Structure formats: structure tokens, C-alpha cells
Amino acid sequence: MLNENVRITPADSANCQLAWTAPAGDWASWVFINGRHVRGPLVTGTPERMVKVPLAAQTIVSLEVHDLPDAATNVDPIAPQPNTRPTIQWLAVADAVRYRLYHRAYGQAEERIFDTPAREGLDRYEITSPITLTAGWHFFRVEAVSAYGQESTRQAWAYFVMDAPDVPPLLRVTAGSADGLYNFVLEN
Image (cartoon, rainbow, N blue to C red; front, side, top):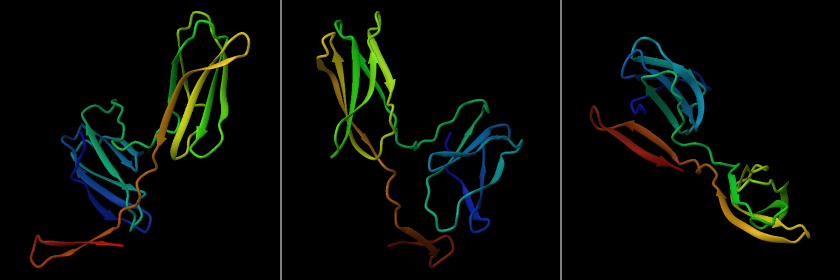
């Protein structure tokens, strides 16, 4: 369960204190900053939680606090990092003796990144990309190679890796004209 009531208080120039209330004292809490695990599982015995995390003043981040009743449960961030090593799958060709995987990043030359012999009795192949991809468009092509060395395209894919979004403008919050009222201003 995502906890949406987190209080942030500066601790020093590079850290802050996060405080929140979990549903129960025996629930476990996890903290993620920009999709990266920084604390947890945290079980304190009381619902009130407070931890120090590396978060500098004037920094804009994606902050998540998850509370779950079981500390053994694996928790993933809501905003995971882009997949730079996709899984690639293709079906076997009866007469193939080898398979070759080619890669081309947008605007660049194509290169062979994987070459494997065909395995008898295997009807499907699956590999994790042997290279780490950068942001942008990528194109993969699997070639089935015959006993005579002739290649024929078995399957081709386009894949897009997206960078994290740009940092939004600074949001300045000031006291409003009365108690409980605030002014919000986006600064460039």
C-alpha cells in the first residue's frame, strides 16, 4: 500500500527526515527514491515512523513509501527505471543451424551482438539483450542461418528506451492570506 501522507523535514544539506504513520505497528515499510530502494523493510512496533534519507535541499525526486502487513513480501517501486536489457524471443526454424542477433541504435550502423548454434528439440529461444541500451530507439533482427551459410530474417523488433523525465520547475510554497491557505508558484 502506497502511503501518501509523508512529512519531509530537512536534516542537513544532504539529508532529510521522512515521517509517516503506517496502518499498524507490525506493518513493514519500504522507502524508494527515484525508483531505488533506500530503506526497509522497517518494522518499529509502532505506527509512527521516522527515517533519515539522502535527499538534499532543493532536490526534486520521486519519493515512495510503501507499507505492507508482511515484512517478507517483496516490494517494487511504482516508477521503475527504464528496461535497458530487454528479453528477446523467437521461434525456431526447422532447417536453421545457427541464429544471429543484430542490433542497430537509431542513426547508427548495425552490428551482430549474439551468435548461437541451433539446438535440436528446442522450439523457442529466449535471451536477455547482451548489451545495455541507451535512451532512444533500438532495432533488433534475428537471422536464421542455414547449413549453407545463408541468412534469412526470422523476426525483427523496434524497442524504445526512455530516459527519466526532465526535472520539473521548482514549486515554491508560501503562506497564504489566512491560516490553512498557501500560495503555489512554479519558478523557472
